[in-house]
Amino acid sequence: MKRNTVLAGALCLMATLSLFVPASSLAQQAAPVFKSEQLVEPAGPGPSAYRLWIESSGAQLGPNLLLLATAGGGVLVDTHFAHPYIGQILTGGVSKLLAGAPLRQVVATHYHPDHTGGIGHFSGDTSVLAHENVRRTLADGTSATGLVRPGERIDFPARSADGLPDTTFRDAWALDVGGEHVRVVHLPHAHTDGDAVVVFEQAGIVAVGDLIWPGEYPSIDVDNGGTATGLAAAVKTLLDTMPAHARFVTGHGRVLDQAGLQAYHNMLASTIQHVRARLADGARLDAIVKEGLPAAWSTWASDLVPEDVWIRTIAEERTADGGGGR
Image (tube, rainbow, N blue to C red; front, side, top):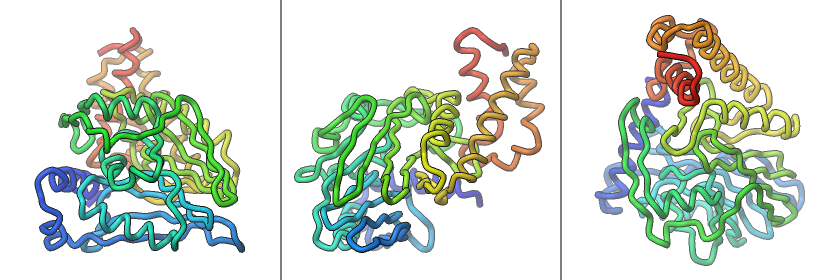
């Protein structure tokens, strides 16, 4: 089974659980547990960084989170789903890793509920930061197509105040905590219109949310400002601006180094160029879909984003501004 089958199933399951299933029932039926992987070991009083996730029966439920832990406090990137039992085990795990230090800041990489549903578990004494478009989308409510299964539309109702970020930014934001300089940078019209990457400069760790899908065609929320060209530009920005030793914690999948990031960008640039070249030659979209992409990229197809979906995502962005043809 491809990883995205597990991801899509988890997204459906957890979204349903967060709305309808009591916390005690989830604890009995799914028995999710908190897991962590230390990415950076502290040197003396320096920062430590952990990839966090929730697991049930050996399978990961939902996304990767990232925690910076220092003697002066912690920074958590993303908050998982809203279900109270998930919140209970997540807040407990984070507190244990911080070893008495306060959680200073929570940052959301984008609006999707597997990344922002748990904001209410951390809001209050802890500031929650997101791009201004994320807060607006959560406050207004929205819908999106293809996040769980190709072509399937999901409605996301407007959030109450305790589920919203209390602080927003437009282009960039920064914080110093426990000797670590944290930068948050907006990369526009990529996976969504509100994507942020979180850079822990001393630790050399970058949280990229759902900008990067290792080994797979990307999921792009075109209903909420995401674009293929914006995503390729965002990944190129990371390649050009992040240090060679940086490691990238993805929203779903393995941690990547610069070589892995470069391979992902090569796929984006090559497939976008191929589809656009065929459109420029006068090929109809249905014919391009039937032909498929060059064999070098065929293994990147997944259950969530099959090859035809990725081709159409590229082509329909192109035709929207007058180029190409069907």
